[in-house]
Length: 138
Image (tube, rainbow, N blue to C red):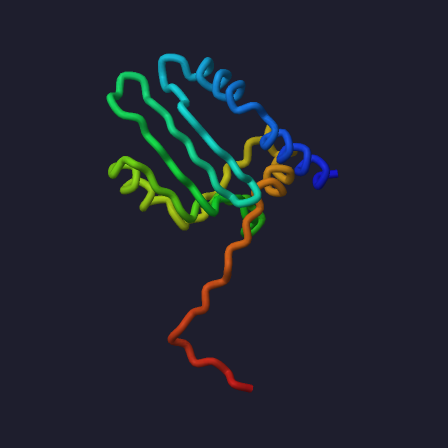
């Protein structure tokens, strides 16, 4: 059942008319931000946003890659592995969160939907080979 929902949601994201999504987003963000452009690819785990914040002279562009949800020790965690922006202060901020698995808090109202969110955003973290230890050659 979850696999069917995942496929339907991915199709809905791909087929959603961009101008309608942006119009709704801009309506909800009125007085805060204006979404100029965006792109999301859940299969490739990439996203892009071009946003103009209300009162600011320049827009902000953000590209993120390799993001997703993993399960670790009976909890869901979100990880963002790559991100960049056209703003140096935002790139510096990314340094504090990139590559770290952040525990997703348990919210009772959302708990039934976490398996679906995990199925949509599941990411496999490659195991890093640790060097400097003596390996058993047997």
